[in-house]
Length: 346
Image (tube, rainbow, N blue to C red; front, side, top):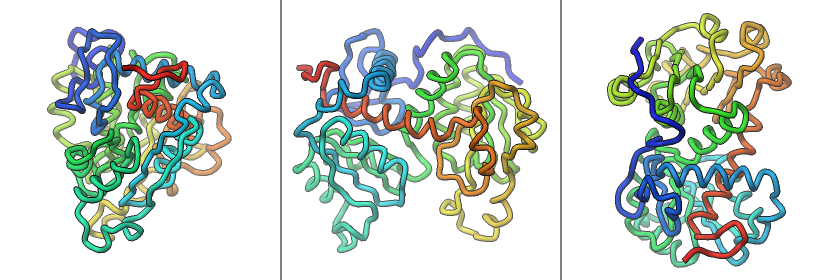
């Protein structure tokens, strides 16, 4: 394990800075605005912007009626070139609960992409109709490309194994709401650590907090990529260990982040079948865990969490889904320049 360097405090430097329209503002400027910006990766958000998003999301949780009309007259497009349930419906529910409207498609066959239209032309067209776009595409870098042709903010809702920034916001908001802090936590990442974009983003985010420790639980074939260890953990001095069995690690964890083995990321179905049941969290394993363990999962699950675990008060993955809607409500408001009272920033 590595000893940690002098820790940062709070959310400072959590994601770093992006570039161009997608970049974060001055990290010391608490009034930095997100209006009109693209959110392609977590690095596009600075410290004050994250603080503001989480504070706004928690305000919405406490009093959702206060925000029920703030996006009246605004339209969100959900362009999903890859199947999704939670992310797409979460974005649509977020906009509808803010009083806005939605349009879009849930698979590429329902768009002119099936006729050979380029992504650039699709984005040029759709951005003429709406105020903000949430897009999922299986090709890495597609969201960045879309941002080059859109006249309205683009939110990356997942681009292959690359980025999924609103899932990272969801995860962080859930942890902050349940644990009340980020620093000093022991976080177990379990399952598909190789292809899981949510795992990579959360590892990057949590690595910036004081005294955070990671336990990486996976078979050799699905270990976390070397670049996460070389470019994230080691430079930050983060403590980490790699284990093969969930049973030997679960008793030491504050957070257990389960993931499914993603069939769609495999080229060889035999490899998928061999690895898909590597880790299954059940009631027996939960008996080895701490009373205050928090179990998270980006969903969908297949069979990596047994249904019997759902009734355990430590299972937070369905609460996590709801926090995701509030995180997206806050993000939409910020990108549209809408302040809490329903007005707009200049």
